[in-house]
Amino acid sequence: MCGRFDQSQTARNYANAFGWTDAVFDSESEPAYNVAPGTYRPVMHVQDGERRVDDVFWSYQARWAQGKVPVCINARMEKLTNRYWRALLKKGRGVVAAEGWYEWTGEKGHKQPWHIHRKDGKPIYMLALANFGGFEQNRAEAGFVLITDDASGGMLDIHDRRPVVLDAADAALWLDPALSPEEAAELARRAALPPEAFAWHMVSTAVNRASADGPQIVAPVPEPDRQ
Image (cartoon, rainbow, N blue to C red; front, side):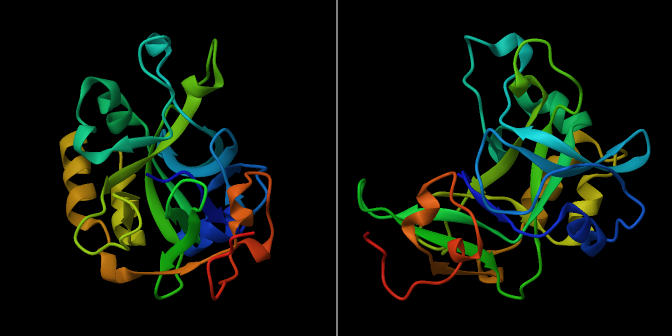
């Protein structure tokens, strides 16, 4: 899964790196090294032919699903075409740009956090699904989730799931409204960056606190921090 990520550059910097110098911004989110679910974060998407960067709530629950389906922060790639996600796959595709994400290893009570990022230092472009409309009862009705896939095949030995990350060109294609849901799902499977595109290092257990922030969060530590 992906439960935290590092989005420590501004939304405008990420959009410029993506080639979206003409994007319309409705984002007031500040850069954050330790983004947690339940916060509003900038999501890139295309709406009515317009490139947009809007703040969206990280967590999603369909309006009809209250009491039936729990609030989600991730969507499994193998389930994208089922009833729950299909409408968002058609009209709610987004991209969340970041520096990297966090995973944990070890036993409960002794978890060691890791920062995972591209080896070449470029931003990561994580695929997302979102309801970019409004909500009536719960903020999660108008939220987003990150798409995850099986992390087998040598990816880190840290967690069994990882966010689906694409290169900028493929991520831009994912956002193309002309792409059908089936084509979008196939693109996500086919174009996801392989394990060898990533590097990782241990970071302080300070990241365990959702309120913790700052560059020290991502600094490598030579040994597991057990404090």
